[in-house]
Amino acid sequence: MRTAALLLTLLPALQAAAQEPLETKLVVTQGGQEIGREEFTLRQSRARGLPGSSLIAAARYPANGPTTRLATTLERTSDSALAKFQLDVESGGAVTVILAAGSGARLIVRTVAKGSESGRELPGGPDVVLLDDQVFSLYNPVAELATAAGRTLTGIFPRTGRRVTFVARRESGTGGAAGRVSLSGDITGTLVTDARGRLERLEFPSKGTVVTRAE
Image (cartoon, rainbow, N blue to C red):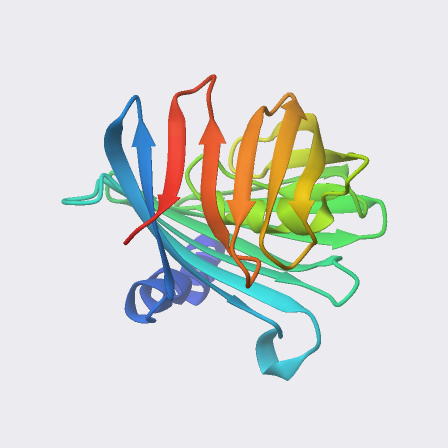
């Protein structure tokens, strides 16, 4: 009963992401073939007008007749600390909700699905970013954190528990504006942002995955 009640409380995030107009649209291809679509909005404030930033994203795979839908909310404080993370995944008629919250050097991840709840504690900190293999707008904070000398970041994939280490090196531009960032280490690729700091293009050559802004 507790799990069912919690899911009923959390599920509106999926519905809200589906209904809210999101300003930036992405096309996801692999091996030259389109496999999905994503939409997202970046705001320079958090819920209730608190200082910081928020990202709201909705993704579907495949784009037409999707079998998997994802809705994501990421809120960060003005000093880039994690304030809220929620990832709702609808696949095969079932919904899983992943929540993450950070405090200092700790990151608490909680997974809620029909009939089950689980939680785990992971190392956190200012160099930790939350990522997902199907929600690519989550790479926006990576672009903001990148430096010209290269910044070592830890990527955590809350849905799977995977943990990676990589370097984000800014090749042009500045955080929050148009620029190009190279990624090396456990994640290799390049990402490009527009004048508003929004993801415009993301490439992972080893996977044959390319994410581009829809026309």
